[in-house]
Amino acid sequence: MVLKFFKTGYLAVKNAFSKTGSLLGNKLRNLFHNPIDEETLEHLEEILYEADLGVKTAMELTEKIKGYHKENSALKPNEYIDKLKEEVIGFLGTGIHELAEAPKDKGPTVILFIGVNGAGKTGSVAKISHLLVKEGKKVLVAAADTFRAGAIDQLEVWAGRLGLDIVRGKPGSDPSAVAFDAITAGKARGCDYILIDTAGRLQNKTHLMQELEKIKRTCNKVIPEAPHEILLILDANTGQNGLDQALIFRQYTPITGLVVTKLDGTAKGGIVIGAQRELGIPIKFISFGEGEEDIKPFETREFVDALFD
Ligand SMILES: Nc1nc2c(ncn2[C@@H]2O[C@H](COP(=O)(O)OP(=O)(O)O)[C@@H](O)[C@H]2O)c(=O)[nH]1
Ligand SMILES: [Mg+2]
Image 1 (cartoon, rainbow, N blue to C red):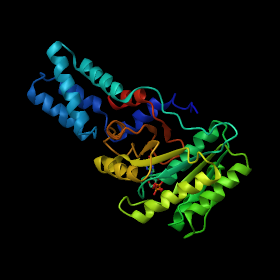
Image 2: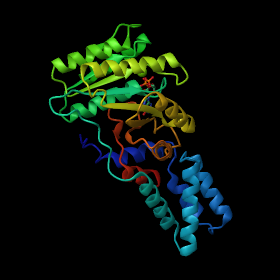
Image 3: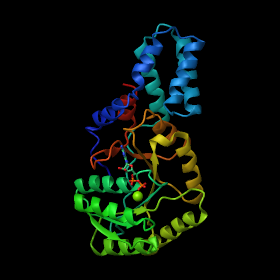
Image 4: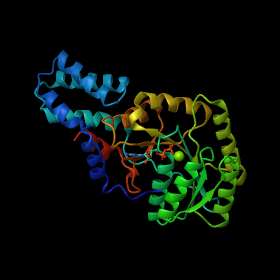
């Protein structure tokens, strides 16, 4: 389904970045005032790397700039930045990656939220629910992080605040049972979406990964196509480490989309580019604050404009 809330996004993203001074634009404009020589190019690669675009992407972009300079040595600083932006947009493609939607009469659409502790899963369940509700969808959230009692309460507070229907498990109970109850209830109540919060998984703990497998099988029992989405939540501050985690998660489960959180608290917005490119998993949402409005569907052009502004 198309979420229509990205009109105001550019400003929101830009504000989030400018708070922490992560805007690449200024750094790059300063840099491109220098003659484009080996030293400048090396510095360029460093700036891109430091912004967490990833080694490969930083190198490739630097090579491209070198090439452009060879073709036309009279380019202005802003023109180099425009070239970089074009390249990045070329890597990532344009348009938004829409959320999956269950076929008509085969709903609700079930979305599983996974990731390590503290990545922003519970917050993302709440914020995305809020977006969906604003689109007129009927949403139910499932507190299936039964590992920590606090996590259930946390989602319940969000649900109360945002007026979301919630199915909660008892602390210590089987998360699959919560998923089962939630989907059964959501079906009976004619919900459009069921968003399932799960416990923070350590990527090296096999039993937690097996538990995830069981949750998936349970979803599948109630609705054969479910879960329709498995979103991995990545904290932007974790940089390359976060990408490594994602690779391990992916050994255990397909991931249909990424949600990159905490873009307000980092100077490393480039992780969004590195993540989509190096993992080949589409970024569906970016989050840039703790409030329910601080999330939006990811749109390449707008993001790149904000990042390189
Ligand atoms: N500044 C900021 N904080 C965030 C963002 N997303 C989540 N948080 C905070 O990060 C902490 C962990 O988030 P939570 O959703 O509980 O993570 P979980 O353990 O994966 O469920 C909470 O204090 C959130 O308020 C974000 O985009 N920006
Ligand atoms: Mg949580």
